[in-house]
Structures are given as C-alpha cells and as structure tokens.
Length: 411
Image (cartoon, rainbow, N blue to C red):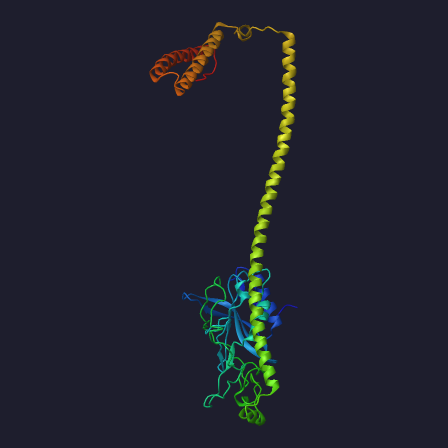
C-alpha cells in the first residue's frame, strides 16, 4: 500500500529535484520510521541572499537522555541534488526552549555531524542521519528549557534536559562550527514565508503534549540532572559529610566522560584512516584497470607479431626458392640485355632515366662530402651547378619522350 505522503512528495519533487525518485524514497523511509516528522514545502534562504523552495521534513525525534525520553524538534531540508548531497539539518526550538550551543550545534541551531560531512549517496540516508543525530543528542542535548517568566531561576537550571555545570562551554570544549575543514559552508538559520506548524504546547494546541517537554505548572517534577536534595541531604551538606554513593556517582560520571572523549578521538582517528584506505583502494583499482588494459594490448600486439613472423617466413621461403630457380636456369645474366627496351623511344627513356638517377646520387654524395669537410663550398657549388643543369636537361628529354610514347608525366 503506498504511503499517504507519496503522492504529495511526487508532485512537489518532480521537475525540481535532480533525482526525484531516489529523494522521494529516502524521505518516505524517514517519515515511516519517525511518525512525528511531516514533509512540507518551505523557502530556504542561503548566505548569499538567494532562496529556494525545498522539501522540509519537520517535527520531533525521540532522544533518551539519562534514562528519560525527550522529543527534540528538528527540521531537515532536502537540497535539489539529494541524495547526492547531505541534507541541511537544524534544531528548531519552541517558545519554551532555547538552543544550547555545543560541539555539534551552533547558535543558530545548525547541526554539524561527521555523518553529514562524510556523506556518501550509496551508504548514507536520512534514517541513518537521524539515528546518529539522536545518539549525539543523547550525550549533549541541543536545547534546554527556559525558566518560567516572573519566577526566579532555581539554583540549578531546569533541564530540557537540564543545562548542567559541565566543562562546556570552556577551554576543554570550545564552541565550534563544522567539525572538519572540508565541511560545506554553513547556511543561515532557515526562515520561512509560511507559518510553521505549532510544536507541542502546554495548552494542548497543535501536536499533543509530549512527555519530554517541561510544563510551566510541572517545573518541580521535571527530572533534573542531579538527584533532588532532601532535608537529610541538606543537613549532611551542612555537616560537610558526603555519602559514599555520591562519591561513587561522581567518580563514575568523571570516568564516563573521559572514556567518551577517548572513544570519540579513537573513532575520529579510525574514520580518518578508513578514508585514507578507501582512497588508496580506489587508486589501486584504477591502476589495476590500467594494467589490465596494457596487458590486453600487449597480448594483441604479440598475436599480430606472431602472425607477421609466420607470413615473413613464408615469403622468405618463396623468395629463396625463386632465387634458386633463377640460378639454376642461368648463372650469367647480362643486366643490360635484360633491361633493354624494345623501341628507340623506350630505350631513350630508360637511358635518360638511368643517367638522371646517377646524377641524383652524385649530388647526394657531394652534399655528404660537404658535411664531412671533404670538399669546400666553392667546389661543391661548382659541381652541383653543372650536375643540376645536366639533370634538368635529362628530365626534359624524359618528359618529351614519355609524351611521344603516350605515357604519363612523372615530373
């Protein structure tokens, strides 16, 4: 049974996207896995001021943070070259939330992930992108709840999940943009000309309220980043007594953060080495194809050479046989008698041609002698002038004789 949104996506993508079928199928797979994401056509404004109407998949994705599931509002913009290029991903907080700038989210809500930086059309898709996004947000939430208006903020900010006093932001994890230098230029936060569909609100309008959203009248029961202090705990802090469980939790948290940082560094190094190995593999495949082509050409040339060798051997045998036959018939042959013409005109042509060729050879050897400094320039010019004059006269005689004999002109 076709998806209800398939006809809508087909009509909106046809003629606008380079690969509408692949882009539509990728979007349908995403909204099938995440029911809260809905497609729409909205205008996206780029850094250079240009704007385009693009397909936007907007809604919430579930993120588990410290055992509690939160629904994080996001928007994925599919570019016209999708799936050849990665989507433009943003966090879109509601009026009760605020963007938390971090290693993967900037102040405008733009999301940066290695999955997007290393996007490959055949192995990457929108479902995998959202899964990686949820895994990253489970470690570092991209939004937190704003304090209720008119109420002083509590000692610890209420979480959406709660904004904890972690080392970030600071020198350990400074805010940053794209994680790699080859990341595409970040685009501004998307603005739309159409009214955005409402996100969950405490009054129940729009989408039904989600369990992860902090309600204004439930701020006291929202799960906090740290366990609430009881009266006994407050008395123990006054007496400067720390329970073993708190020390253990603190140590486990510190070790967990350190292991996560080391795991991320190891994963980044492994990805870099994998990219280098893939590049080397592609170069080796190209070289192998070239070598295969060279081997095929060599094989063809060897076959041609063998055929030519066999043909030359046959011709050599034939010529040897003919020479033996001629030697057996007549050992003493007079060349002049063999080449003697039958008529005076033909005899004149043959004689004049032989003399002209002899003069040509004489001029050639004179030039060789000049190059080797056997004769000087004056002697060379003197003899060449005389020989050229004779050669001209002989060629004129040959031309006239061939014309008289009805032969074609050779000069």
